Length: 435
Ligand code: NDP
Image (cartoon, rainbow, N blue to C red):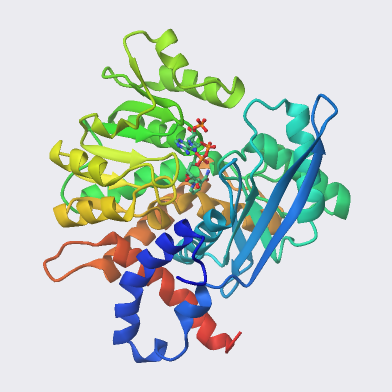
């Protein structure tokens, strides 16, 4: 902790894993004395670089770029790029650390990495975003490759940004390879990749509910965020018969007790993805809904909560409110949206709770499937990719149950995901020697 004293998010993520993995190591001789966890918390490599670009006024702007190559024991580094003003080394190390375990859980051969910039795409023109992406990739291209490190999207990096980044990589390297995932369908993308994280989060929650004889049908669902993950979690929950009553962004949330149906969701997709507007505009279009400024949606009564915006957006008090309002299931769509205290509340109440590294792994799993299709130079159909995604989510659920079931039968998915993710990476590291 002393070594990473200025990195609170990273310490938070490591502590959560250590709490469940250290007792497991203590019980399993083969993992002792190999300093596996100590090695896993130290990135194999970190790049930090200057990203200069010119805005529409002709002024020079300077951002900071990063790539954290955390662990390559089981495959090439893999993990998204985040463009958000809050981006710093602590956040990217926490995300890269989580990614290592998550990628291991998917069963696909992918190591862990994460990167991004403190660039804020909000309010920037397409041309500015393009110039920024080209400058960012000019440096990043030196460190990545289809067989070494394959970045993807994350907060602030969607189809538009991936397109500009890919275009610049191809131009610099003169090769058409699967060096990024989340690409457009016309140039090597996979069907279902945009949907994958949100759909996967709901598939995972569905598996958890099944263990208690429940399902989504007729349930009231509270979702935070209104970006990629939130939109497709909403879509799948509606398809399974649930009523989704909230969405949010960093300014506030909307509640629509009548339910956000497919037509309203189409409006949100257009609003956020094309017009790049704010969620409060929802109430101008649908006046039956209400907008609450500056708050998160956790006080709204629900059966299922899916936090899909960002880290630490659901705190201890919110968790207590959810539990006392009768919420039976919380599935993390975002990375580490619940604080450690909030998770403790859910575990003590013994409600169904899944950590992001298990429940949002569908996104990176489908990125893995995109890499496979690029290598094969072949495309699978929508149904084929969706079926593989669903199977992977079921398999991750089964592994969490295997490693996380406690003596009284309660499934601690936090423990299950951490140990299952650890075992594969640890075995590979043991086999590869002290590297
Ligand atoms: P998007 O950029 O598409 O959407 C992010 C959403 O979260 C927006 O609604 C945004 O609101 C909101 N948000 C961002 N920062 C904050 C903040 N500080 N406080 C409150 N709300 C905030 O990103 P994604 O949907 O792709 O990602 C959401 C989460 O899911 C992240 O934690 C990401 O790491 C995780 N994730 C994403 C995967 C993917 O495939 N996309 C895969 C696995 C995990 P605003 O518009 O105001 O910024």
